[in-house]
Length: 271
Image (cartoon, rainbow, N blue to C red; front, side):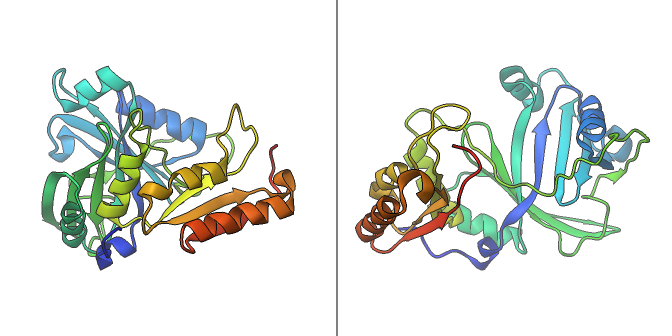
């Protein structure tokens, strides 16, 4: 069963995604001109940050940090060689980075960077970092006492090029973690214990851009390792299964799980 969450983990929300890329400036230009992001901040040698260049772009509540190395043999270069341009950090905002880090490590997370506080003219920021699947990390960012553009070491950045049309991206909806073969159970348990995640969810389609695993079957298969977690259909489709069959399936799953099913239903937009 997952341990009781610390208060600092109760209000986790996405802060930003950091991508390690081959050319951060070109990537920032692409996201601004093609996807409608606005330039926000820059960090690099000119701002006192050594060894890398980072461009921050934002659209509504969705923030990307695009980072490239200035060296040929550091961790960023190695990551790009092995993975290409890709997400390195799925960062969470929290009111207390130290408490979030301590609670996650107590729940089994591997520490990467212990809590550190940076003070500047624009206030104080606290950060910490834990490891997750593959080479990906989670940063905890506490910025309630900070008034700057982004983070210490960054300065405002702007350019004139914009997307020709408004794209309308609002926020990070979710992140997909591509874990190793037969490691799904392990990582579901990890997020429950380390970060206090409370539910396993599945969608319900017959096909969706290819074969699609049956949602209730997936939730039933999760029972042996999902102790204490809710089992949710984010989109259940009674119209596909038949209302009576769908109701019976979810009722049986709820009975087997001890009352932990959350049945979300929809008419659906795809078969």
